[in-house]
Length: 376
Image 1 (cartoon, rainbow, N blue to C red):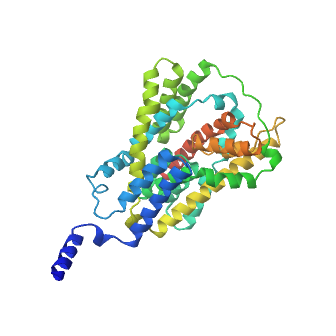
Image 2: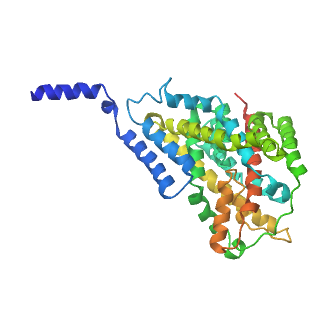
Image 3: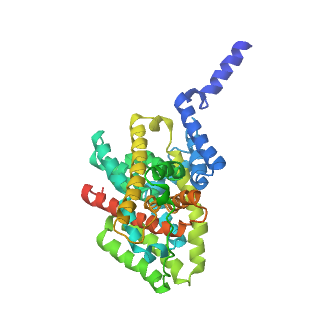
């Protein structure tokens, strides 16, 4: 009888995923659970981490068909791989975004360029570690802190690195409240962090309507490799600013965006299978991504400090860290760090200027890479 039970148990095990479960699966399941914990307990970008964490867990359950070709999660991944999801994300972001802070204070656009040193630092380090130039470009773009742009550039330069690059980009974006503040405080004095900003000038409706049209023309003229993303960003923003298509704006900013976020997070998490993810190459990419974020934050802050050497009306150097393109996460981090020093110092509106400029900075960086390295 005992022999029969043992034989039955062995036969049952062979028909399930238990026989294929290994310690790597346990590690990745723990990572997925940690993401969900950070989202629930610490409120670190729950819109991203809950979906990524859960699909990471499922991707590491042996025997699940969801991540295989024809599986539900695999269909979600195809939306990313075919570059359908990134432009739609930009469309929704454009419908939610007020570019007024950037238009009102154009000198802060400089910070959107200064905060992108990390892209090129990571690119150089990746090349030194033995990655090809195309792979190094895909890794470097993580430093722009722009998930859709990272996906777009990676699919053009090194599509085989999409799982590692997308996971690194979105994970670090969600963890920016942990990554950025220590760098910001290290590079600034309390006196600098207490600098208050003068209220920006009002921006006319004509300026707001003209802005997406002009940017759309300029981007398609000078940066065609990344035009699909910025064009959709500008289209969403034009819908917002003309004030006559409220239904479309609400759909793009809410219903459509929510659906896209669900698909995106499932797609990203489903790539975190232990068999392909737990490699030395993945560790290198994750570390380089962190280096890129740190250098980008630091270069933005230092860029603001350099600008203050030439400005009569000083700007708060914390705004420099918002030059990273993660909208509105980076702007919110700058605002929170300033509030901790002075509860009446509201930097969020001003921080949105360099934060939005950072989107264009990442687009320019990505366009340069695609133009020089070559679009596949």
